[in-house]
Length: 468
Ligand SMILES: Cc1cc2nc3c(=O)[nH]c(=O)nc-3n(C[C@H](O)[C@H](O)[C@H](O)COP(=O)(O)OP(=O)(O)OC[C@H]3O[C@@H](n4cnc5c(N)ncnc54)[C@H](O)[C@@H]3O)c2cc1C
Image (tube, rainbow, N blue to C red; front, side, top):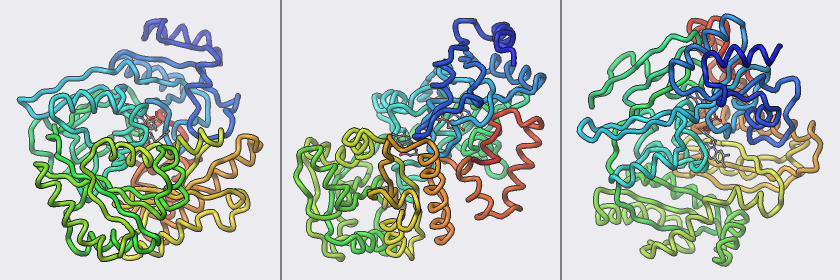
């Protein structure tokens, strides 16, 4: 590929200052969170930051004419391998698509995909609203990346639903360069075929989202609490009771097994909790209602004999406790100087105790991951567990790759066993193999045929559907 010629062609579409062929930029814009090295032969040719949908459309038309893959990139924090490209191409960074407007009289807001989740959240909070995304990556992940994954992240699905339940419509540039608007500006979501669904949760393979319209969600009142159990089985049984006994489902319910909790608590100067910890954030329209919801929740958890079960009113105390869980992944990395990597095990409700056991033994018997200590935490209210390991940085590249491969393979086996699927991060790339086994070739062909119809030359995010 003549990169200079390519750059000069793209300069006819996007101002020169927003195009980079710099080697460092090309490496940085094609790396993800995985610990293995970038591959020289797969580095992108150039990185471009278009200003609007028309520029994106023209880039895609050009790429189709010249058969050059185009990768759409928010912040590159994907956990599925979707942001580590397997062929060279053009990387479109969405950062300049950063418009934001609240339309209170219409009860929605619109934003560009390049905005950072936390920045959007702060803007909404300042007006009394809530953004229904809460990933651990909120300080870096882009709105486009989150919408394309439709990830509920730490929020419990059964509490307020998935982000796409709030997305009224999007504007997207198709892989061929055509532009489409979906959805509605009304308060009534579409019944029947809603093209929004192709893009919100489309793993980025069907088009480039250039505008997101989301319903405004009034801010909740909160009530906080935590419990400590000397036995993870009892903690899991408390979660089952919550559903079976029809308790008000909280917004967040996080857990850490004892070894992991000890580390998080130590970081925050809290001393050892003496068991596995579960955190509750209940919601209501008023403080009183949120507090009553938490009381009802406690009724179920009390039955499983916790060592401690407490409401927390002091916000300083809560912040300390909550951040012991929130920053655990980063803290484990800081402490060891190595790379954290976890899986996403999702149980069904009936077999949660058994699945917790599988999560505890996640790396047992695995040739590479089995050499490492396991840490366990997760979004237990959604029956999601993140067993993880710290991958030593002095391991060679092949071993690091094998560690990631083993992780996804074991995740696949366990989620197939329980008939579930990942509720975060997206469904393809490293997870394509899971998708094919879970939904069969019939299911996979639906995606392949849709992709072919929208992207006949397989220009956009090539490799994601095919899998790593
Ligand atoms: C520390 C850390 C914590 C994390 N915590 C969570 C968590 O709690 N829950 C969770 O679900 N994930 C989590 N993640 C994973 C990741 O942050 C999310 O998957 C997030 O959605 C990715 O956003 P991004 O902007 O980095 O997307 P990218 O990695 O840039 O892209 C992800 C996918 O979206 C596509 N895409 C991006 N923008 C667009 C667009 N405008 N139109 C169409 N497709 C697009 C890309 O092509 C790619 O396929 C975490 C990651 C890190 C590093």
